Amino acid sequence: MAVGVFDSGLGGLTVLRALERRLPDVPFVYYADSAHAPYGVRAANDIFELTCTAVERLWDEDCDLVVLACNTASAAALRRMQESWLPRDKRVLGVFVPLIEALTERRWGDNSPPREVRVNNVALFATPATVASRAFQRELAFRAIGVDVEAQACGGVVDAIEEGDMILAEALVRSHVDALRRKMPTPQAAILGCTHYPIMEEIFRDALGPGVEVYSQADLVGESLADYLQRHPGMVGEGEAKFLTTGDPRRVSGQATQFLRRRIPFQQA
Ligand code: DGL
Image 1 (tube, rainbow, N blue to C red):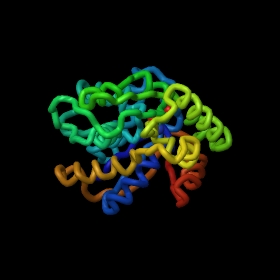
Image 2: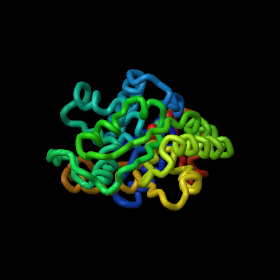
Image 3: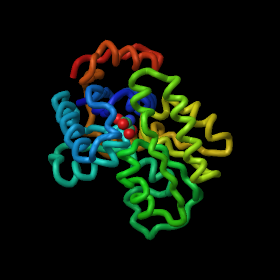
Image 4: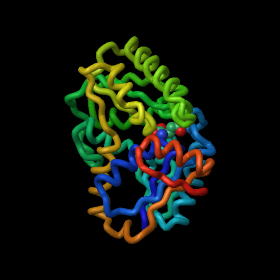
């Protein structure tokens, strides 16, 4: 049994890289819904349907546990999937929980009243659908007080990355950071709230300047999955690692190989 890792496209590879580093013995099956990327401009219902289809395809690969390595799906679809769709013997985890745990300095199940935390001004860079969901602010507000979150919907960045147009992606990142700074001149921390954005992390860091702490969602998700698998060892076993895409495998393999700097052979989903 392998662990499924899902994203609309290439962004989840930034999470996969951290998962492989943290859990080198776990076989992962990666699924990129490249034919339908980007998700970030879609309606919540559409994101729900597409994510369910992808997760079902990962069940065919014997993945009873699937990580949604996609903030957009985690924000717009995960709760509905868990509440009304997921069979009892399957699990789907998102990428939000570890991030909120890190920011609020407490475990997810800690239901004590919200309290003050170290970071008060947070810049959230995410897709339009993630920003519109307000999922991040909602979860934060349950647990922390006095945290000001300024969200910037980074239109176009995912499309540019998926197209391999890194010059456009860089220009867009810089203009989104400028737009954020006009609303919040001195953020203490920045969340790259889309798994595609770490591909542009150096540009984000450069545009934000040295005083801003950038949270690494991928590493946090790696720690969190390691902890989960220790508590649920039956969710993983022998299995074959592979990469699936709904897009053109040759093209997607080429882009992925460039981003991860190692050969990533995608096959048709
Ligand atoms: N990488 C995804 C995320 O974390 C999806 C981006 C998109 O498809 O728009 O939000």
